[in-house]
Length: 525
Picture (cartoon, rainbow, N blue to C red):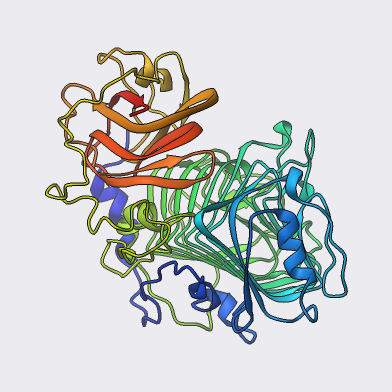
């Protein structure tokens, strides 16, 4: 059972009112110029982070082409923006040599370089089992990309198992609107999603999704590696993470307006003299979300405005020092930049509408509602449709008009985000309206998958009896690429351009209660 609303909101009473420097609506122009500016948090310090602004813009559809773009510059510091579209993997990523680069075949290598932007465009950029490694480099922007299933053991391996890893004198990195995900923990071959070590400083991770991993990320590789820090985390979703959200050894981190769901063992782990400023986050269905864990070398924290919704705390003792059940500040942290805090109660809805790749680079406008993208945004599945949610728009399907043909979901597989007890992913493809899947809260995702590609152009989401109208906003995703196929509100028939895929995801980003999806039907036409 969740705590009563009054208790859940009690921790939000200390919300800070700070001067606003953000709130600008960003969209994804075809030339990706948005990626050249707009850094936030600590990435704005130490001279700022502008990436490849002012340099040449090139397009890459393979990892080799990314390396060729780096190696084709006049020098290792010549600014460049690399627009990436498609799936980057081991099969299309080779080492390229040159005076302006130092690349490797088993990862995207940004080594001993500077002034670079890598931005996903068009149908999306997916780095599949291939990590991005930043070493001895500075002024780097990574935006609107998906990095998934990077392994340190098994096959193939890449980047020490880190989705994005930074090490050895790295300065000024901004990672924004990206999706970093694994399919398990260390025993399954994965390591961290977002790691910083060996003197990495002035980094911001914003509007991104980190999920399904044993380790969210670390700042400092050991208790003695305390040269890292000045890192900002804001408006990110951490979902189904065992620990390290993040782990901070030494240094300073500013952590605000993030949504944490299903932190299974521990969350923000401030240790070895670290200081964490933790403002207006929403922690949900999680354990030990803040404290010093797995060491007797303590860190500290300053807390304000956070909401703890169904959070459990372990007993302190030995190398376990949780901050709860009533977290209090034990240090003070001053940050040198301006920022705007969303109220913690708004964080789940704002983050669900903005965080991750292929969201049109939407950001919070401070009103508990994400800004809409420009209708010419190339990540929009139908840029000619002025309002895909307008029921009078002739291009939109009638939600009461049943699709025709064979329901491809029957006999397929399924999975998804955390499910409520007593429900099953398989209930959405069994043809039985009496069974259903529910997420653990009001938002979540469920997928239908096949062993070989199927062409899908319509889905039909059927809510269980008694829950009709509960589903609010949604996205339909091509899980293979991360591309958004459709978005809108309400269940029923959803049509989009035919696409060949092996896995399709229905993501509920807003609801009036706990959704109950009885059937997730898929059709070719």
